[in-house]
Image (cartoon, rainbow, N blue to C red; front, side, top):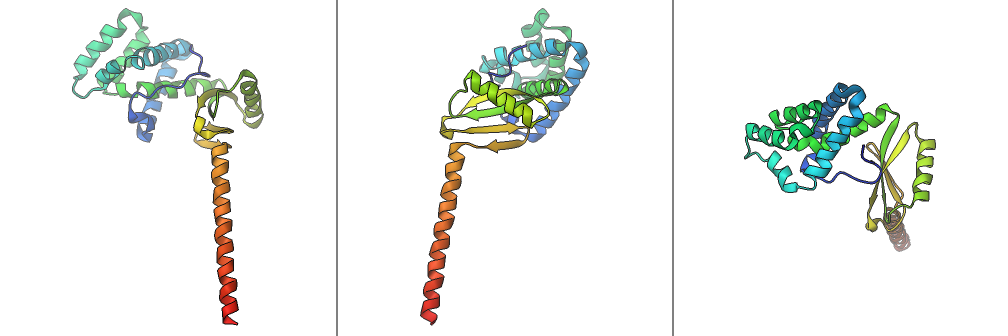
Length: 214
């Protein structure tokens, strides 16, 4: 199974940000994990390889599979030619079901949901960590330990780098974001200084008006 701590799925289509697509993908992902049973790791490996090694590295092929100009039968034929005898029966049938229901555009989202479900059942959860520079091994281990102490699960770090943060970290656990980045702290400081300046200006106006009234 591929290491989930060092890579982030590359976007294939905009469905990654569509809540309704996320919900549908979760249904398919749950069905796949449940059907796989004790073979969940192997099926996840196949799904990850197909999405990350085939679709993401061949975007033209990904667009072909999701094009509305290609009929379902043609897409099924393409899937059969690509997977052939190389895929397990379970994974091959799963991709064919997606093709028959015009859901091949959800493959990347399903991968993320399936990994999250499998990890959750093992008491693990993905935590997205964004930093201004790559974390070294000591920083990663220290962060994992703090997260274990804070939450009742084993964190699986998904690291991103965003130089615009300047410093600090942005940590996302599920739908909750903990932002301690220098960029955000500077923005908050500017906001407080602006509010203080406006307050002082208004106070000065009030004192001036009061003096005039006297």
